[in-house]
Figure 1 (tube, one colour):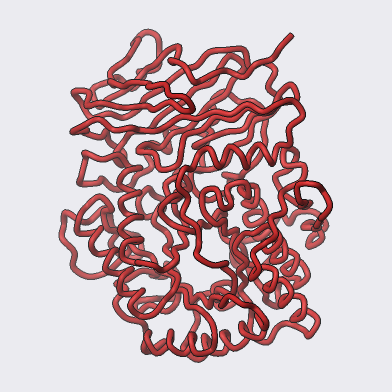
Figure 2 (cartoon, one colour):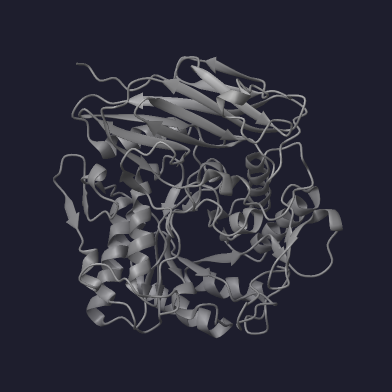
Length: 543
């Protein structure tokens, strides 16, 4: 018997859609067919475009069903709308019909792999579902937690698929499909390696500490051709507090007294031979803003700006432009998904919770959430000019094609290795997207007295030999002479930016340990379980 994956390069077998006027139970037969959303499924040579039209009422959801025998499927791979970690891990799992598979999925069965996805940069938030009798594509077309009042048609997404030959390598299949999903990736102009001071200082930084850290960085990077990055993370801004419920927002117009003059800071870093990077949280601020540009109020007293409003877009553009004018070569922007949609909007398997996650109401109702988020990213990129951008707490498929670098996982840790393992190592499952979507950033190796330096060196080496960003947080002076020699060798590898080892046994792991080149002649293997002889079970973010 021949097993065949369901073909989606054809008209769907059924479609249901909901607008603001549709019943809540629009998917049930007693209300159907509920086809309140007007759409077309336009079949091309290599993809299908889903076009959604004004439908007489603000559009919310569109569900397309493709029927076929999928009983032979053994496992399904899925990730997250945003970063992985904290319950939304990148992993292969059994078939579960209701599980949302954001953006794309890989399917293993009968010795072959099938891939379903949408191209990057869609104007919706889509997910797939796989069951034994078919495949479903569900499009969230909402604006915040309400319907979108379309004034004109939109191409909500472009659908692609790929089916491998029998016996194909899972990692190579994932690489090929990643390239199919992104037509125009934006990549860094030079390798991204160096240090970020968050995971040893945790915001308690000063002009002098940054200068000392830069000196240490240059010792670690002796002999590199490209300049390494000294990335200044949270803690530079004027209104930063450190008590319970700390405020970590803007305005982003000036540093605090510990930092002093930003132009002097970047001039000194450049003079030492490094590039400069700076973190900011663009949507959280204090002070007076127009009422119509307020999305919601934060618990720490800050104001979260509405990313759909022109005032916000111009403000974040100017903030990025100002940071670039201070002399920063890289900008890392953070927290926007949380600020727009609420805490962990994508972490639950219950899809309805995700749809209702937005805490505030966007004032501009004629654009989908996905469109609003893309325009927000573009405003930051426009302001940054030729500076590199790292999107942190940004949405994966919407970041691709706009920013050059993407934080793929939740935070690593300088307090224990468990979070580095759970979040950083698991996020390396997204390695097939490296240089296909953007440069993958699995976050920092954190060198502190609380974490085994050999594990951190292994983690950092893994980043270098796979061609990802190679970033560390290093407590100044902590490395022994031998450790300094090894980290120098790692940064020299990152500087050359030539190695691209892939993940061995990609379809049998969620914690990559073995990395190899295409012919198997080079192999690197790491033991992440050595920290706790397994996994640490009892821990907090602080200890």
